Image (cartoon, rainbow, N blue to C red; front, side, top):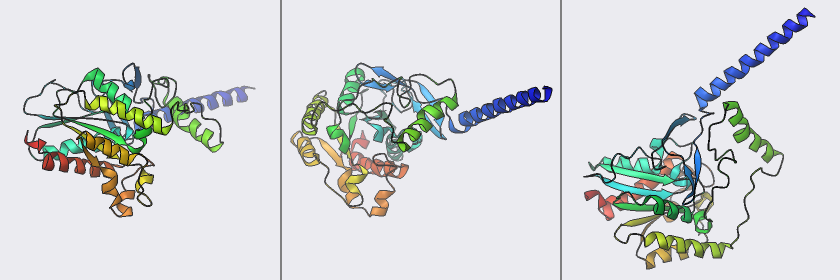
Length: 322
């Protein structure tokens, strides 16, 4: 009887030690238990909680006091500084798999600084933000006395409804507080969804069916974009049009609504960068290296976009001379 009791105690201690070791590894090596936090917002639907500085999967992630994936702003109107505000979705944001220095905004900032121009490129973005969410952010925070506004709009954004914050604090992908355990996050955020996918189970947070047809949503988004364009007619604006992987691979294809979208920009004399057109002319092996998945980009893809932006901003628009 005593041997059985001793064995049980030893087994219990072994399990506790195993859990503690695994918890420590998940926290220290992978950053689990310390996720990027979101919050609901009446203007933007949701945004990242301000003032976050964490490391996840070996990548640095920083959000400033305005929920931008950028360093803290120390001046509302900096002197002798070229300030560029970029607004977009997860493509611009980069997510937790992209290090801070590898984002589009940080790479663009680094390129301009090499010319000797003191530069700030602000990154206001969040996953699944649509054009309506971008408008909400600008209405809430303004443009921060920027010299240029860049709107990143992808193929999927053309018919993307304005996202709301109903999942924040419920869906493990949109946490609003830290989990008690890293093991808890690993199970709920990573393991459970994979099990559900493999077993063909109903996802715990299914997509809400759209209330508008794609055509109706496209026209609704153009109205929202028009409101952005009319906010400040003196502020230069560039629209950065980004493709999905299927738009350029295995063969280049014309995305739905792209022609109408670019015509809309032309009639309003808005400059744009057609990344889809540029990448359609590259070798497939090059373009493949730009995509991490069906939408999101690798650091190489971010660098390629930063280069296109740099060429237009500094060589064509000559804003780097400000």
